[in-house]
Length: 132
Length: 132
DNA sequence: GTACTTGCAAATACTTTGCAGGTAT
DNA sequence: ATACCTGCAAAGTATTTGCAAGTAC
Image (cartoon, rainbow over all chains, first blue to last red; front, side, top):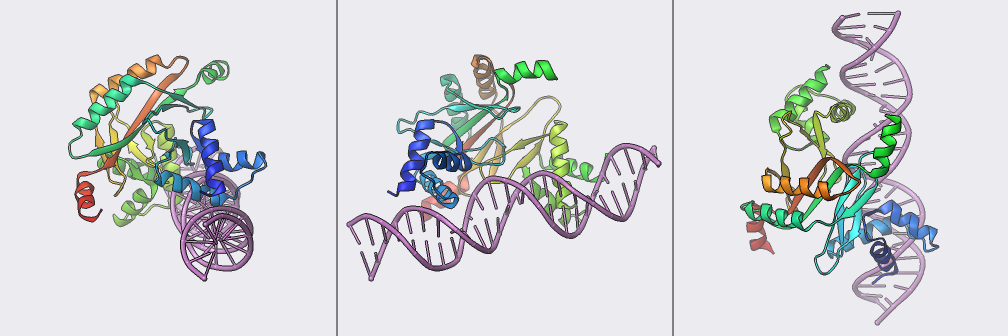
């Protein structure tokens, strides 16, 4: 396993939630272990193919990646439309409902799913009250 | 209302499900009512701001847009990871579960949500059997 | 040496912006 | 005339590719 792959994977595992290629590149550079942009993209692509990371997007125009845990545990995201903050959440009832929907989707074999709740985070609700 | 805005909106309403800017441009060109690329993007952005269309993405690297219906009715999507086919579905139980999750997300005010089920469509399951 | 990894430079693709000409009121 | 709509050309940003140099076995 290459050095780049290891440091990217470690960073993602440490952060735990969706990071963009730029954030990965910048963070590693700040830590004095700089990695070229193409390498970051290549490694993220490989890790995605190996199913070690999951690609997620929130309509910002950038791809984000987060670690996939062995147990199949995963979370979904709250996305603030105002400040782009991303907050993970876990909801067992929602997971059950997704499984049910998948079962009812005849002819389609689901292997993964993603859910994004969009709106305003607490800070932005307060800010909105003052300015708008 | 400009001519471009009307034709884009009509096309989206007619298609009903997520189209990319390129698909909109190409389809209108094929219909002998060509529209420039910048205009398509500008109009889609305006329609999004007016909440007449909804932006959705599936990790293909392109933004897609679909009409928003007045009644608040909406659907979610099955996305085939192999052929990128997009199939809309509606599932009331899932909607209820999302509403529940939003209620349990303290401090976050949800205004919209999106759900994507990923996997293989019927055609690709069959094809996969033959080739892989 | 062979296979895999990495970086640089260049290319590609999607999307946005600047600006000038056109249309409607 | 004022405001808006539209297209062309150019710019910006994310991502990918070609290729040569470096490392591990």
